[in-house]
Amino acid sequence: MLLRPRATDADCAGLCAQARELHVAAVCVLPTHVPGAAEALRGSDVKLVALISHPLGADRPPVKARACRQALEDGAQEVEVVVDLARFASGDPNHVRDELRLCARAAREARPEALVRAVIETAAFDDRTLRLLARAVAAGGVDMLVTSTGLAPEAPDALDVELMREELGAGIALKAVRAVRGADEAAVLLVAGANRVGAPTADLLRGDSDR
Image (cartoon, rainbow, N blue to C red):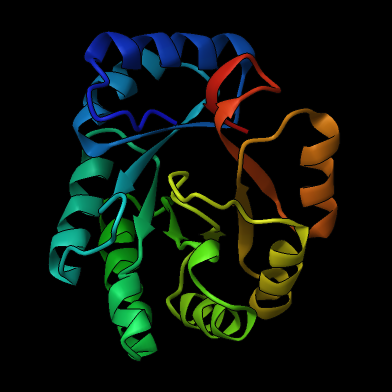
């Protein structure tokens, strides 16, 4: 992931070069870096993911949908959309469902094969509320739920992953985002039900990347 506020084009190019060398699953960047990253990753086996409405998810749904479309037109293959957690916390789970449906439709109109992910913050909610949020995400028609923006003070653990896997079922993938200190920690999350582990700093792979 490349989320630093002052990350430069050179930083992006360096991340992409490292990702190509290590054959990571994907590189996650903010929309401003998508065109350059797409060029840097051209011809590689590394997917390019654009992070939409990061980190608060506070943009209005039409803005998010347009951003998804633009990022895919700029060369991203996947988008991660931070859901509007403030609206959800205010008692409006349907807003999460509806904004994700809008984003998914816009993304697939721009690139039919595009994968759409929803980003939440597991640390912000108790177990009961997390279950409700996972159901809202599942109803939004996305391909994957991502457990964190990578900036929360607390990271999801195996119990969080198990809880969300129960609610999502087998049809929606799950990415657990946390700093892992080795393959054993990553394996625990995968056994708990994660399909992918995303590390803000990938100790497993030597640098910032997405497993």
